[in-house]
Image (cartoon, rainbow, N blue to C red; front, side, top):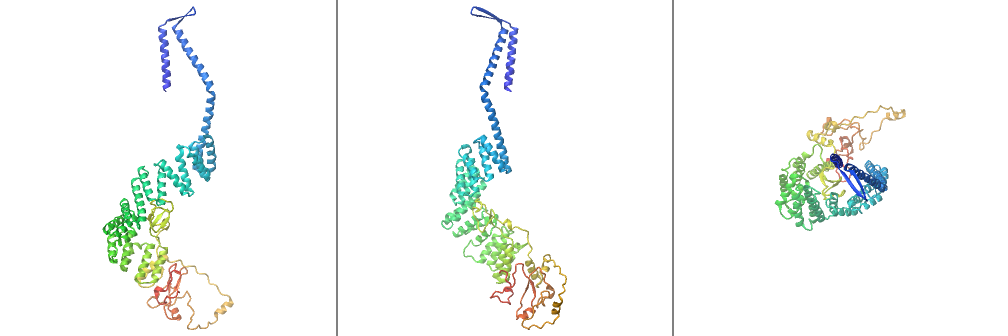
Amino acid sequence: MIRLLVFLGFLLALAFGFSWLADNPGELTLVWGGRELRTGTMVLAIGLVAFVIAILAVWSILNGVIRAPKSVGSFFSRRRRERGWRALSNGMIAVGAGDPQTAGRLAGEARRVLGDEPLALLLEAQAAQLSGDRAAAHEAFERMLETPETKLLGLRGLYVEAGRYGDAAAARHFADEANTLAPRLAWAGQALLEFQSQERDWEGALSTLDRNARNKIADKPQTKRLRAVILTARALELELGDPDTARNLALEAHGLAPDLVPAAVLAGRLLTRANDIKRASRVLEATWKLSPHPELAEAYAHVRSGDSAQDRLSRIKDLIRVRAHHPECAFALARGELDARNFAAARAALKPVMSPAPTRRACLLMAEIEECEHGASGRVRGWLTRAVRAPRDPAWIADGYVSDHWMPVSPVSGRVDAFEWRVPPEELAAPISDRIDDAEEAFEESGTLIPLESAHPAAKPAAPAEPPPVSPPAPVAEELAKPVAAAPAAEPAPAAPAALAPAPSGIPASTLPTQPPAADKVVVLPKGGDGAAQRSSSYVFRSAPDDPGPDTAEGHEADEPSKRFRLFS
């Protein structure tokens, strides 16, 4: 645009000049070599303009001839680079589409045309990664290290390759070098922090965390949380060797993250050892308000050593008032009541967590209550059997790994603060009604033994189709028609499964099933006396799905109802 304006201005000035000369004519006399030349000013101006135009035309022609080889070379070079960039673009698309053959071919073409262009090297490395050629990818990333502009890209690629093939030492080296060159790189700072935490280099991890915070890699809340986790991990290592330092570190971690359960438990435990009961109680209470946990309840109950079970129970009651409707309150109260030998109160405390289906922890606690109160092995085994198939309770989980205790670093991925207190995802399922529990409740209400179908109508199995009667062959019919000799009184013939023996005293016959369905197990309970008396006074009882039958091991008395069944083989 500017050139056009300049050109138009030049034409306007030229026209104005010729117009002025036309209005003011004059003559020019030139004496050269004894000769005199005269011409008008207009003719002289036109001649000068024509001369300048001729000079410029000649110069343009000569310049075009001189620069022709270079122009031709630039044209072909430009076309070559355009072909290379087109191959680079199509190669990136092929990598994104997952086409290793096309990506490799286009990467070779782009590399041949563009040479050491960074994007060409990147395409070559990604195509090699896509096709599984580790050596070619490693070579491409190493070539990037030779140029300062692509060195960080090469370090990133080598780090990813080392992590993909499990070379932790090489991955740590590349992350450390990248973090030194560019401390603002988020991947390098986070990777270095994880490697130092895996190596239990807590001092180095704290330094790296502070450097990441200064470079805005992690926000302030995340930095505080990670610092609390690292301080807790270091305090756990120093708990036995240097309890004073461990206590200070645990208290600092609790101040940074009050909802971090391991920090609160460790701080409460160390303060208890130092006989600082009030401060230990405050720490545990503060974390309990945010996230109730069984370890907090256990530490709070034993915050004062030497207390009686009643004192611990009173302290637990004070603790659970804050989160009275949380399931952990029921477990904590039941444990306290059990330790205090208040068995009925322990059962009542567990009622909120027994519906719709008790978890494994609730079943185990009920088994412990039964064993402590009655020593009834049958009921204990029943609860233990239910615990095997009961839904799981919350646990420490990180990357699918379930642990009984908290750890600062995930053993699977190496992430810091990866463990969470929650129910394992694979164990989540819809509540399943417990037929044994329904039968027990019906027995407690009626005082009589009734079929499971009556206690839980939905659990009644469909009656199997009866096969058509089959007539026996003639010889067999004749043998069956013969009279059978009377059996000895000491060994009477066992009753057929279809016909039930008379009900024992105390149990109404109307409540007993007339014929056991084929889908359930049938167990004949002995009622004491000799063999004949036992057979004549037996009755049918539905067993649990996993009940292997009567226990015949030595040492079990036949007339004790609690010892008649063996639920585990």
